[in-house]
Image 1 (cartoon, helix red, strand yellow):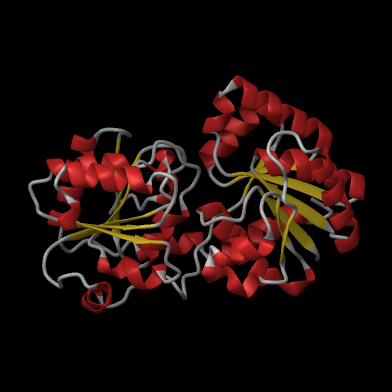
Image 2 (cartoon, one colour):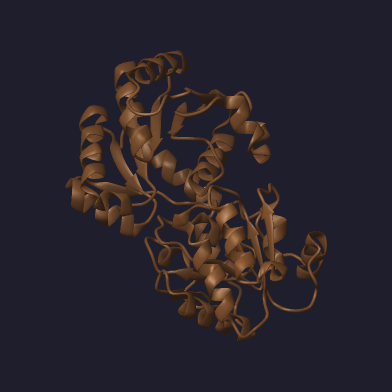
Length: 353
């Protein structure tokens, strides 16, 4: 089966990592299309995706409404002749759904990765327009997002799985991981892996660090528009000596085992792949109880807190650091396997669905 995926911008993120994993499995007979940007700069900015060179196309969409992009995208799809086109998020659904319909793609499917943006009337109107133009099948990455989407569209919504590569993300020696990062082998280490934008709540985590009695070190992996502001916040709070900003890394699986606790203080989420990957490495998690985060957390080992509450976040992190002898959350993470994700997407795109 030839399946083409369309994303808004192939920049580092959970959604894009999912698309990349699917692309690697489906191989060279399909492609992933980024509406925005140019392929070479996108790949240069995300070195871990270098193996996708040749499988990534970019349409260079201009800001605002770009009807020429629809035409160019339809032309690309006619050349690729996919059996199915899968769009991720509203922009790709609007442009890609219409282009796929114009190109005569037999199956069109749309996967929604979060539902918080659909609370905005303007976004919901845009979604409704995209739904009319592309007429795709609908799917979502969590039960919560699926329920909200079905409620708002009054259409059936399938569930697809966000899956981690369990052969890549697995427990390993914490001391060795810390040594590679230049961290002390003794003392607690907490970590965050995320694109540094406001929705991920890294500023809340920095505030929580100030409230903690335990002098834990914090490792932040990722980059984004909020990084400079976060570094300034850390300096003003006198925390820089306890924080390592690692920037973009392609070896996340070798970093996660260095953490005693993985923290995701997001303001909104779909189903966060980062939580699954951390737990697959045997790391306990603390997460803001937003979106589908609860569904991604092991009920026996994870702690959930209200969003934007640094004191509650600090207390939950300290409680996790004090726990001993818990079962490994990896057992829970195994339900989010790469194989399960691939199977759910292939079921969504079969012509007889």
